[in-house]
Length: 202
Length: 271
Image (tube, rainbow over all chains, first blue to last red; front, side, top):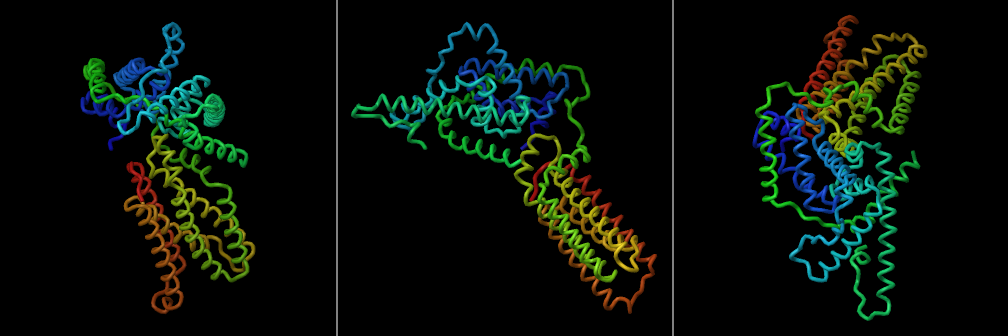
């Protein structure tokens, strides 16, 4: 497989095929990453577009990023941070937890319902984390990145990434356990208690 | 260090526990139509690249692969028990050699140092893959150069400890001549090492190691045959022996240099 660096070199020379190949390679992962950070698919698409535009501008000045993958994630992260700080973000209705889950044709109605419930809990619990912790968790679990890569992307020391991830996971675990307990208490006494995806998975 | 290890273990355990929980948060993947739309939106900006004036590329903060910086970085790869074990082996070899005649001490060194190098290369290769993948993903250095840098650390360590041991022997052993003794073991070790590095960069790690072991056996057997039967057929003067040994050292260094040149161009992991 042709390397990212080589593709960017060819893009800087104006190679259309390299441009298309590079966008195809990174569109999905960067979109998913930003969508998880912003919890908004439309806004994520804007961020993805802005990220690629910044890359193209960089190439126009014949500056090729050393490690393109990390560079892309770093720029996308920074655009998300700018958005969080913006007045637009504060003024918008951010109740975006009701986004549809990707429909799995094989899953039963109950499974889909459970998954949506778990997903809602997950989304709610992620709000307890700081911006930086959310980014670390997202990169680690959904982008399947190594800790060193995350440190490079977020420009943080490796130790800071580890401790942030550790505290974030502890916090999430605590929040989610409470949710499960609350649900169990609510279900007590009812004859048809619904088994929870969260509690049955482990 | 142990505390750090425990913290890491705790983190990995927590990650395992949480993995299932995270799998519930699925997001929509953009379709190929979405990608086409993105490409169309980016096209005008991309077209500006082609119309911009020709300029030399500036690889942002890319440094050409520096072998020295790699050597420094890779020293930390070897853990303390590797250094302690290696030092103990050399201490034992030297103490053992100090109680025998010069010719036997030479044989011990000729036997043990190339073997120590082979074991060192094997250890490097065995512990290479996982760390290698991490480093490969975050540095612009060719992976082969990283492996070679670790091998050179092994070579330097063996030569350095061998020299220290030789100095010790020069005080302890009677009729000991330092320079011929050094050449006696450095020449075969250097030649074998150069061969391993050269073959490894062309045919792969396993081939290189196999070739190194074969070269070591051949040299040992050839040395033994010459000492038992060879004197009767052909006799070399001291200066001739020194000349041959110097040639072998030079050849080994030359092969190592060729391996270095090749490692700069290799971009794939090899077995």
